[in-house]
Length: 214
Image (cartoon, rainbow, N blue to C red):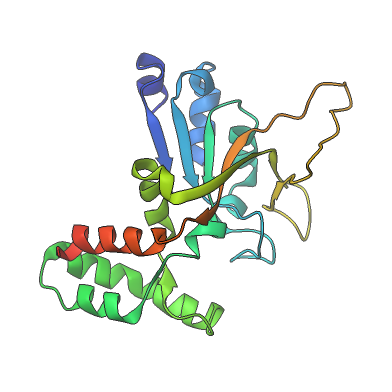
């Protein structure tokens, strides 16, 4: 990844669906990585809600907060597709039944691997119908960014807190005081906050078409 980005400056967008360990390592291996990568769109974090592995942290950040911090502070063009939006797009019983009832290899695969999420969210969020497919939203943003409401915000990740390890902290203040050295605080991240209007239905319809057709 470091070599590809270095050799193709401004051309490669990384869709990161797990902890940011490999992206941080690429940045350490290739000092020009952050300047040469076109964009990093990652799934993880949350800025206006609770976590899923702790009260404040989501799994992809919690599992390697130090790597997330390296990436966040790198100066790269970064978009966070966190659980602020991924929880808004949920597979309802009708759709998962259609997927699991289809005989294609892809439908059988998706039907099988989503059983873990289905079980988890039936316990974690029992009052909300269906379950989210977090990774899907990264691809959706990459190809259909106009379906999302975003904001450019300063975002930090907590790497030392006992109760807040892995928390992604966004600064929403209208006027943000400068850093201690007088420099302005950098708005280092595009943060996805909401899905626009009928965007949820459009994303799920796209998902359905990819897996089982019309």
